[in-house]
Amino acid sequence: MKAFLPIIVVVAALAVVPLFVHSNVVLNFLVVTLLIALAGQGWNILGGYGGQYSFGQAAFFGTGAYATAILQVHYGVNAWIGFAAGIAAGAAVGAIIGALTFRAGLRSSYFALVTLAFAEVLRIVGSVTPITGAGVGLLVKLDLRAQAFQFQSRTVFYLVILALVAVSLVIAQLLERSRFGAWLIAVRENEDAAMALGVDAFAVKLAAMVVSAAITAAAGCFYVQYFLFIDSGIAYGTWISIEALLTPIIGGVGTVFGALAGALVVKLLGEGIKLVTGDVPGLDLMIYGAVLVLVIRFAPRGLVGACADMRTYFVRRTKLCPPIGEVARG
Image (cartoon, rainbow, N blue to C red):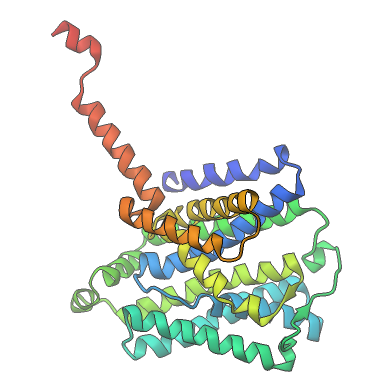
């Protein structure tokens, strides 16, 4: 239970924010930030803990989004059931892509490029297929009822996405404390050595891919319920793959809170840049790139890792330096 205490504290602190913040603009910002954090945590499971750097998280995000939208728009399925089905569909796509790529022995840059290619293929298919709305996209009917997963207040959406992020934090914490997590980290550090010790690298990576895809698909499903619209450019666009990858790298890959910390920094920077310079195309990406370079150069373990290093440094200094009273008595 002690291991989950930081998660409880952070989630509780975020949960009381709506008691003090009533601006829809701020709540919308927080909802989008947590949405990116959820997608980033999905990437972190596979890339941070497993060392499999995916450039195609959009494949899972978009599949989850389209699955829940199609079920509601074309088949009249309840939104909550559609949400669960979307997560399952994203996990299934992750299993298929993982089985194909890992069975072929693809690693590092080859794996990254193939995942990017899968996402791009799905984007093209989504842009021409009638069931996805082709180039027009799908618009979910407005129905402001809890049964339809639609709420009048942004506070409810905020609490829902916070709950999803909390679940992803718990999954990451369980991963760190489980045998499966140890296998996954062993594969990340040295796959050949892990296999020599009896670890089934294929099964471990495939399981991580499925979990990663499910979490990212949940972000896609929530996106549809929040904005009530999806098209191929949004669902399978490179924007979500970039932000899902960027946030845990800045926050700290392979850490429980890395994606959440990175999302807060990335979105705060993005909004700050827009306030100062206006909506200049491409400027936010330039700033993100500069921040990424600085983090990799001066804090290779990310912001969470840098905070842990500073804490360790001050603890050591405290132990090495005796209290002033003891020095005086000496």
